[in-house]
Length: 544
Image (spheres, rainbow, N blue to C red):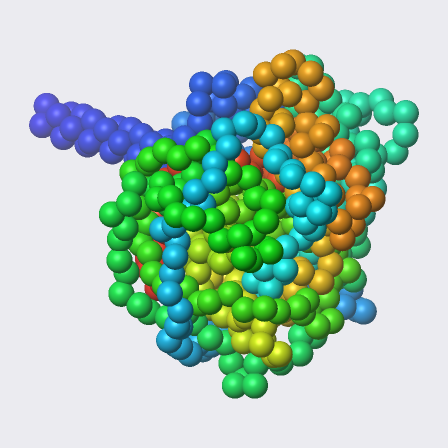
């Protein structure tokens, strides 16, 4: 009996241990997910698991979070080409990036972010007082280009900036895997007309992306070498003034046309850059960021020809009223190469929209948001690394695009996210420097027009986006396309697909700029929004 009892006890312990292990494996991905799925997403996941024809695969997926493990193989960034340099070593310049540092310089100037114009108008819609104002409203303000970001792409990158017009040429519109019949090829002028009443329309690659077609890499869009306009020979970091808080109700960090800055002072009509801005009634809000002084705005001109890329960035300008203008810089790539954990790659997808947003008040930059996967981080303007310019131009912020994922960061090095123990991480370094101010599609967007047209049940979003005067003939239809810009989530039955502990090898493509909360009151894309006052503070915080 003692032997039987001993064996039974061991069996019970083993069973309990195995059950606990399975439960932990099942629970861990759910606890680590920064954006938990809703009921609809859970239902879609059940259907996704059922696509596997293998019963054991389905059970391992449901209970052990091990999906499609027989599909796992090495996913190289690029196929070997004797005419191209080796691309398999993604970390080749990491050591150099980690050794890079920046100089700290003291900024001067007095901040006036707590003030707002006195003139207010509660009427919705763009307020134009004459032909001159209308022309100024359609121009890209000088201060937007003067303070445009400079983007360090990764030195070992394989998927470079892409032109959205070129990307669409290689895509077809599909609904649940079925090609949508269109009378003419897709382009920027007709994409917004492709709609479906019941299911999302996906832009789906005509090519197998694992064959790595040339358009996916977009190597012709690698930025030209950037001239060293900094006579000091280095980049500059913002000042480290002690943070202070405002006792005011609201200010520039949480505004829209219905919620302008709270404090009222006479408008600054002497500066022509501020003419034609919308004004709205005041209200209050309790959010406070860490705040500090920023550099004075200086008169400047467009940057030189260095840093030019053949792939245009997309600049979307939004007048939030009370002197607040948000300048969204969108960066598009035809492919997102995910990162590796134990040499297994996760997070690939066709199409990749990343962005940064600079919030201006009366032409002065106050803060910048950097997109990072499903979220991102916001920095006070003084906190960002700057690059000095010649001829009296203001220093411009320098930001970094991670290898493969193109997530945006304020510094070089390793950037762990989501998974514990730094298993999943982005990498940035001082690779080619891209100046998006030299080549971009520039627009003004009025989110209130979209809101009003939707409320009136009319055709939505056909007048809310207007090209800037610098490119008056640009099409606008593409902006209103409501579907993802890349393939749908590959099913578990697809030999290219696997999922381990909640992380997919291939995820579905991203939505376009219109879905990035352009009407946001806060600087961040998500409601949780802490504006940090130093790069070091940004490294210690996580958007999730």
